[in-house]
Length: 258
Length: 67
Image: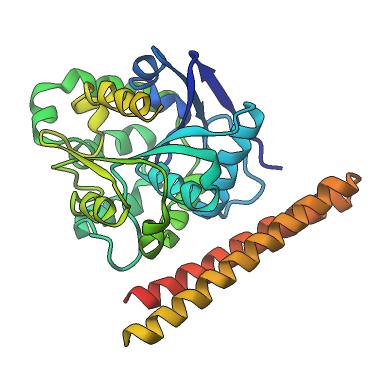
C-alpha cells in the first residue's frame, strides 16, 4: 500500500510543494518559513522517499501527480497553488494538466517539459546521476555539489552548501526509490500539452543550472500561455540555496494570483 | 511528418489518454462503492496498473510524435 507522509505549516491560501529527485518534503526547509508567513504550506514526501512508502518500485509522473491529489484530499483542500521543483516540477505540470480544477497557480522551478525537445544536460551530468544511487550517501552528496550549485555559490556560500548536505544526509533515500524516480523522469513528456495549462504560471530557473539547462525554462515559458519567466543570473540548479530571496518573490506571485 | 498527420496522431493520443483516465476513475469509483476487500484493493491496483502502463505507452507515442 502506498502511504504518504505530509505536513501543513501556516495559515492562508494553500500551497502544495512538490520536491525533486530523491529528496523528502523536509528539503523545502529554506522555503517553508518564507511562504508560511502568509500562506498555508503543504509539504509531503514523494512515494518511496522519507516517511512515505510505495507499493511498487516502479513510478510514473502520473502516479506521483495522483499522490499529490491524494495529499490535497487528505488535507481537505479543494484547490491549491502548486510549486514543483525539478522532478517535482514535472509532477506539477502533470497535475495542472490532469486536474486543472485543483490548481490555482503553478510555479515550475528548475524543471523541463520532457520529450525529445527538452534541452539535455551534458554527458558528464547524466553519467553522474546514473551512478549516484550506487555511491555511499556522503560521497554522493559531496560529488553532486559541482552539478547542483552555480560557481558563485560554490565560491561564496560553502556554509549554505554544507548545511544542505547535513540536512540531506539526515534523510538518505533508498536506491530503489531513486532509480524509480529516474525512470519516471525519463518518461515525462508534457511538451505538446503545455499550451493546455490554464493556471497562471511562473517559471523559475538558475542561469548556471547544469542538471536541467536553462533552455528548458525558456521552452516552458514560451509554450505555457501567459507564463512569466524569472531567470536567476547567479544560480545553478538548487537556486533557493543560492538566491534564497527568490522565495519572497514566489510568495508574492502566489498572493498576486489570490 | 506532415502537419496534418501530426495533428491527427496527437488527437488520437489525447483521446486514448482520456479513455485511460476515465477507465481509472471508473475503477476507483467502483472500489469506493463496493468498499469490501479484496474487491477494493484489486480495483485500486488495476487502476494504478492501467494508469502506469498507459503512461509508458503514451510517453513513447508522444516521443515519436515530437521527434
